[in-house]
Image 1 (cartoon, rainbow, N blue to C red):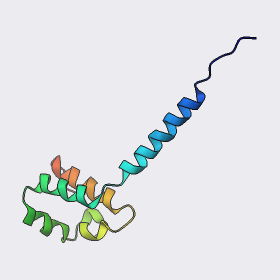
Image 2 (tube, rainbow, N blue to C red; image 1 turned 90 degrees about the vertical axis):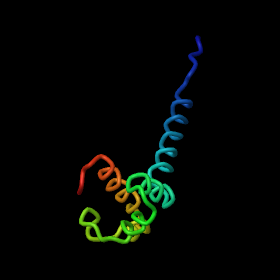
Image 3 (cartoon, rainbow, N blue to C red; image 1 turned 135 degrees about the horizontal axis):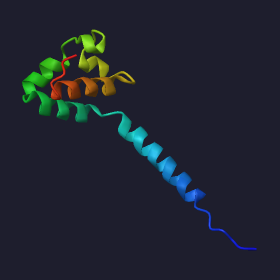
Length: 89
């Protein structure tokens, strides 16, 4: 009988590692949001004003309020990326 080397364990580990990395990377931190906002808006004072402004794209919430929600940081990042690309929501 010939033994066949199985890689299924390695593939599973790679799959799980990838899921964990995506989960960790999936929700941006407040610091990364502020950094992106500074990059997009160009001025720390503008960032603070923007974080406190109610936005229709966030259902009338402020970006600062959304940072405390479960999915809020992802939504705030999406809005900033849209602004970065010239798409105003």
